[in-house]
Amino acid sequence: MKSLTSLSTVAVLFFASFVPAHAAVIYNTYNGNDDGTASNIHSGNGKALAFTMPATLLPGGTTSYDLNSVQMRFSGSASSTDMTVSLYSNDGSNTPGTLLGTLTPSSSFTLTGSVATYTFNATSLTLSASTTYWVAMTASVASGIYWHTSSPLPSPLSSVGVTDGGGVYGGGSPDTWTSTSGVRNSLTVNATAVPEPGTCVLFAAGALCVILRSRKARRW
Image (tube, rainbow, N blue to C red; front, side, top):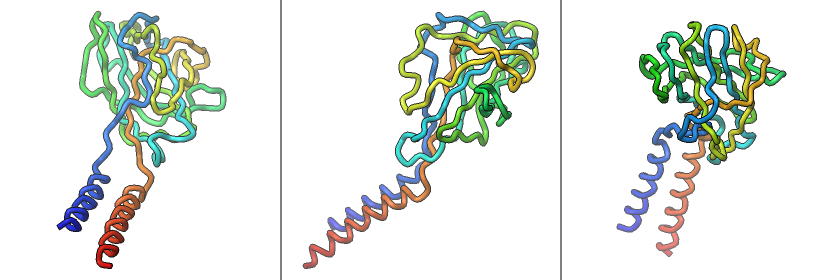
């Protein structure tokens, strides 16, 4: 009976190891307030914030992260159709480089005078170790969008080693922006850790070996 119970436990651990991971916050500049400088985003001025993934990804065994969504704090009078949030690679000058993908609003919305959090979802965007990424915000309207900022910022900005990569702004395409900014607008990055292939299988196999060895010892 004990052996059967032990084997059942291993089976549970084995299948539990394949339960899909959930998204977690890996980087965050929002500290529960909007007391910092708000950036005016419009057709002539966009803003991008960068974050840098650590050389060693956490939790242990993680090979990369799947970007799930970003959250940002806005107020104003524009609508979600007037705004574009995109992810860019980093070029050699620490500015946005190649467009990697465009994020989509979780639902249609219209900004108001009250500050609120809005979510933009990502599809098939991977975050790799030792790599800097830019989240860029552009608009097609002449006014009506304010990207808010917390003061003070959270400390630390990440619990898994992701660090601040800088801020830039400008007009036109983000890959042309060179003006640097010290304002770190509200940006929460949600991502799912991708486990190293075979890690879960090795764990379960090791546990099974321990049980089998224990059963063999009891026979003697």
